[in-house]
Image (cartoon, rainbow over all chains, first blue to last red; front, side, top):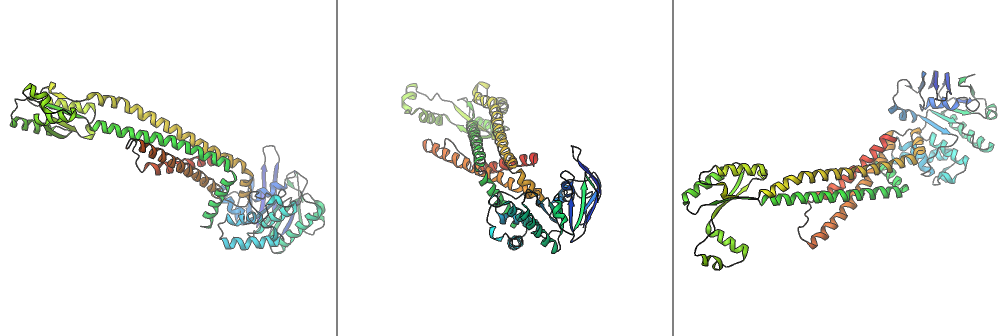
Length: 216
Length: 288
């Protein structure tokens, strides 16, 4: 479903990835671990095609990074759910509209938008705050909303870029539980983190990355 | 349809959030279109007056008292056949006297009884077709008249000076008009573009997030285009109302001083919308 094959990329400052290979199958939960600056976020960027590899390729579903044009990228991203450590909520609209936005870009009908949005909010336990603005919520609540936005359109895979980095341990565990539930329903999850203690408590596949290369 | 409603709502929400800069941009468009509209109205009225002046131009050919009716009829036929002459009217000596009285508000007896005869000559008055109302064409018509047997160049009168004044100044006036109009439009365009640029800059993080959840460029850009058009049309509409009032108030003082074609007002609104759309297109292409 997701395949990165011998992909390399370089930022202008010299950092980047060097011949990375990684595969995530449907329904899998994979931790991508490594120290800060190791290249975890860059791997995710290759998958959601914010960056394209200078060599090698990335396949998302059936779309190959070497073949897709810029115009196709939004449609590839609609198959993915992405969450970030800084949540990246749309601060100019309330919780409901933040989650609904993912559906609105697909030109979904009003009934469908309402039904799916309320369901996603219920899944993360935030139905009661649907009319709150993002700045009225705690960090943990904002991350729940970000997860709801990521899963509202039933993505193939949820890409989580350090989703617990800005949260306290108790809230982090709650977020991981939500990701577990999402995964249990069949959505693959690829979570980048440098919290080894969280990873050590689980029995999921771990891919370690260091200095831009996969070490195991 | 859902997307269209959503994009319009996004545009309106965006304007509400950036209401101050949107108001300034709208006001700028209003001022620009008021200036442009004023120039347009002045230009149209100027050309109306010019056409009116030109249409009054007549070439008068005086006829010797000794000419018989048959000869006068032959001259009339020659005059009518000249290329560019649209109308030929014969003014007899009696008609000339009546016209004299009408112009000078005098009874015939006052002047002409003392003389004992009618000193005013009969004449032909020639009107030129609209396309021939230039000094060059008028000169050619005069040459054709002189070529008629029995007509002397000294018997022909027309106000060539008016045609020369019009011809020498109209081109300059049109050039100034077009230049000023273009400068006004360009400045309005830049201001709208700058406003949209500021909106893009203030929303760059939101735009980035929208892209990450799968929004296409069109989906992000469309509300900005709609905002540009709304600002432009609103500015154009306010300008149109303002100018309509000014023209209406002026007309109360002096009727028919300014005549504005009914198509000018919708044109201003369309121009406003076009300026708004072009401004946002420019900004979006450069900065998004």
